[in-house]
Length: 272
Image (tube, rainbow, N blue to C red; front, top):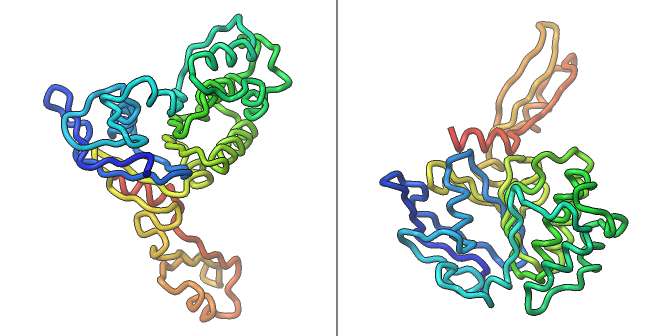
């Protein structure tokens, strides 16, 4: 079973099209990133997949069921980590995770989940005393304590410092390594490149490109830029054969560099 299968998904609000015929497939155990600017249709798409919003047209199967009609048993199989989550500030981390575990028929052990998100040392601390990064880890713990097969992560590292982001990436990789399928939305392109096996870019309600971080939008075939310095000053040339071009540079060429388009370069071109 493919955890997420979408064909011809459409949704409009008062005549304004938000999602305009999206096709999407996410294999089991994969981290898949959905990228796009604000207003592109990401949130609407995710909410439909989560069963929180009804679609106008198209077919959607999430873990083999239509999220628009699926019941509690299906909901126990998914985990959702929202961009901003309210919490019971006076409860401890352990109390909060144990409380949420009680909502599921076969939850993971709360203490194991707390350890998995790196909060064993803060298990007895009240939520209000935690740092922003630690609170985000609590959000993830609540999203996975039910033992979900599929997790939706919406902008998971917004507001994180660089060190906290790297630690969070390790957590996401460990979840995927254990077979959890993850659908990630993020504005951080380095995050998408570091975590996602595949990604798609949505703009104006449509998927404009999809592929791996290395190939999306023809990135693997894009021209390279060769820059160097010689007696005349700084020079720069774009070429399809950078290795050959560098080999033909004169002996006095200095500071030779070869660069290819970054994922950000490709992304900005796709949404322009």
